[in-house]
Image (cartoon, rainbow, N blue to C red; front, side, top):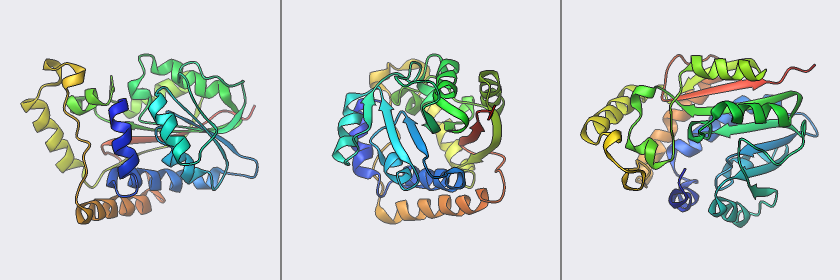
Length: 249
């Protein structure tokens, strides 16, 4: 995410449907994995909302490449935050029981290096939660505005994680109910505003405030998906979510 977007997200996080809905799904998947003494690293922590949520279960640490993000984390009262590179994490091997990486791998020139670093800093048996944008065909100017260099297929993520040494616990899609509508909007935007014909600083972002009732309705859709994901892996959607684990020995 570009620095100019952090202030928008900081102001919207209590009502912005996608962000809060995806955090609820993350909470649903990760909650059963925590035990006393858990220590979690948020790689690409943004403005700290995920850290605040997960601090109920564990000691939380965050790293982000943008100084503005770290400043906003500290406004939330979060102290264990610092700037740094996801492909060269400033932590010793085997430091954390959990690591999360939400919409960050898609921004890295070398995503395999980012996954290897997460593997390194996790303790044996540690959990790695990933949330990334799906379907390369949907890449649009919004992706460029957020600094994303790719979208993912489940197969690509599975291969990257397996090559790094992870075992896949589960893989599911999200934003499934709204997928047909949102995919159509993204494809139309791609035709009207081709991503290949714009400089990054001129790209069009989809991130904007929505009226309260619209936020509530869209958030309710993701809440329903949260209930479904509790029981099954959804087969398609705008987002791919993976829970992987470093082997215990």
